[in-house]
Image (tube, rainbow, N blue to C red):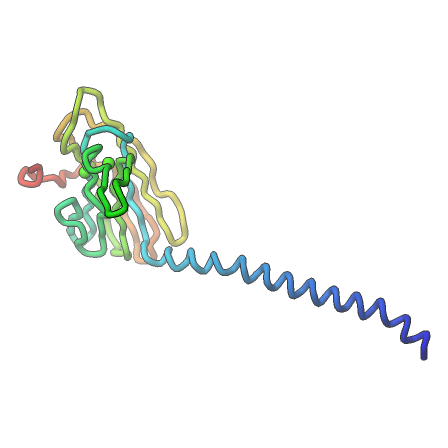
Length: 198
Ligand SMILES: [Ca+2]
Ligand SMILES: [Ca+2]
């Protein structure tokens, strides 16, 4: 009996170590799962992001205009029609400084973002317009369209706006009821009317 007791000890030791190993793996996997669940929370709030940006520190004011399949137009004076939302009207360098109670905070980037919070099937039109310009050099404007669920880059393209008042249809893209992009083309469409130019 005594011999049998001694031979069981290493086995129990091993069993205990395996158990500790499993507990450790469980804790590690739990920690890994948690941030992924948090990211998913953010993802369901938007289906597409349309980001327009131009070089930092320029005084040039570029505006994004997006028309949805229902004919809604999002722009700086109509920031949340339908399921679209424009984060802010970036005026170039002029509104880069934001004065807060904690002091002045600098946002050097020039960027406007339109979020599509849900899917309306049909065609979207994305235009950029040069509202204000300093100097004669063209301003390179980059447009990126991100599809969020599942993630893919639909388009990333840079166009030049040469002078005040220039308007370019960067893209038209169609989305079906499943949220899939079915057609991308560049057929121009004027979205900025005279009264909107201010
Ligand atoms: Ca702007
Ligand atoms: Ca800016």
